[in-house]
Length: 501
Ligand code: HEC
Ligand code: HEC
Ligand code: HEC
Ligand code: HEC
Image 1 (cartoon, rainbow, N blue to C red):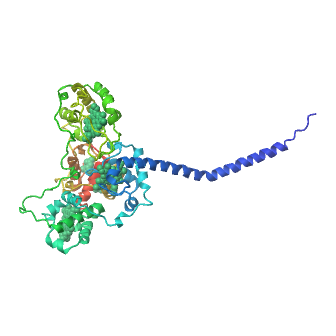
Image 2: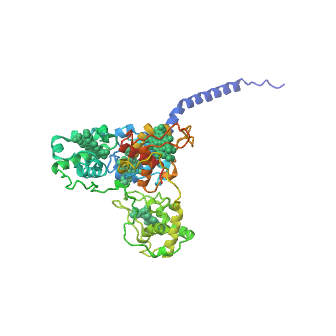
Image 3: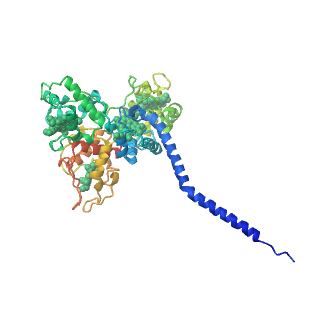
């Protein structure tokens, strides 16, 4: 007879093992949140470190080594960080600020960086928040030359050259003002403005640094008061031109080295052969298929320009002009702006590194990457139903950041979040209010001045859509003075940033 098997021992062991598993699982569950947080913190610190590298490479030149500000405003600043959401910082870095020196960085806007890169930059900038000084509490040192530039770009429109007075606003640099009022008064007058009397509120538009610069300009007026123009009939023109004045004329990019077009222009280029020349000679600096992303330490841009997309000012609907614009760079080479650019564009023609036929081929290839917009003279630009010319806003430089806020406050309810539309308009022919992102393509123009004017006409005078009985119409923001010229300029800059040409 078989012995009765005794399982008691096994049951006991199994019970203890089960208990052990349960206990371990509890401990695991207990520690899981801490583990997730640990991983997240690690991800974050990886992003912050990557962002730091990107910042060092691309941003310190303008925003200072520790974000303290230089040509560009301080980013390591409590007020800025407190008031600006990650999304906003992301979109400003991505799109840049048109009409200012702040370039577009995201590839989605023709820049060199990916979405991930920009997210890393945002993480790095955000990491300053705990320690950022409140720079608005410290008195800023103004630069009178910078103040002069701002004045010549913005204020002269109403106050005349050097503040000696104009048709639309009184003199502010005359002896009476300079003797009677101190800088605290000037600061207050500029910051708050007198919107009801036509003086805009600059405190929401200009940075504290820019206002400090204007006050430094007032100091130089005190030392030598400007004299009014002798012939008051001459309309004031800005005496100082600056890069911030981009909207007035589009200048085609030109190489730093002089010289005319080369013999390549008389030849017919072959795209396929050009692609090979490109891989052999251009790719290492301009990236695979010209998409860029190659750093150029010591240059103002921080990167070698991409050729895909290429600087839009080089593109021309006339293929001959387009080819010439490229040829000048390729023939003679160019040194980018900046204190000490590591890479320069070689003079392929002058140094006979490429034959004229090879230059013609690579030009054909680069042009094939960036087709010129077809000339379609029949396309009619959308125009508002209400008549009227452009307003004063188009003479001003808009701020995308300020414009985004105005958009949220005044436009979003009709044109949707970030302009994406989807808002019904019963009784109109379309049935919906037009989206502004993407915007009607006929409003877009490669010339920023034309582009801004196309938008301005709608903003100034408003428009009633076609249809039997449209419920919503576009208000006349300018004519009814619901927005100041500066606010219109800002919101135009914002809408333009959503729809690059
Ligand atoms: C060539 C100079 C230049 C470079 C390089 C540059 N910026 Fe700027 N940036 C500016 C200027 C100028 C402004 C302010 C524009 C204006 O007047 O509104 C600005 C504004 C900004 C703002 C908005 C600040 C605010 O107060 O609203 C952010 C954010 C910013 N830059 C981030 C960056 C980052 C990140 C980089 C590097 C990837 C960078 N910038 C590189 C010049 C530059
Ligand atoms: C759109 C036209 C316009 C622009 C642009 C403009 N101003 Fe004015 N400004 C005015 C008007 C109009 C007044 C007079 C307001 C009043 O009657 O109280 C004024 C008043 C002033 C005053 C106070 C003068 C006084 O005696 O009370 C100062 C200071 C001033 N502006 C500075 C500036 C500066 C600096 C800028 C550029 C950042 C500027 N303004 C841009 C229209 C303008
Ligand atoms: C050693 C690096 C280097 C090589 C190789 C190089 N480039 Fe460049 N290229 C540059 C730099 C740097 C600039 C910017 C020059 C400036 O800003 O003045 C530039 C500018 C240009 C521009 C003007 C673009 C603009 O946005 O202003 C064109 C077009 C161009 N290169 C085409 C070519 C072609 C075609 C080749 C190959 C035959 C080539 N490059 C090879 C460095 C290089
Ligand atoms: C009350 C609703 C409403 C508000 C608020 C509004 N819009 Fe409009 N907007 C419209 C309508 C409706 C149209 C179409 C007009 C037409 O077809 O003639 C329009 C047209 C436009 C156009 C021309 C687009 C096209 O495709 O023709 C632009 C640009 C524009 N709006 C910008 C703005 C901006 C910027 C703001 C904020 C300052 C704003 N709108 C606020 C209703 C509005």
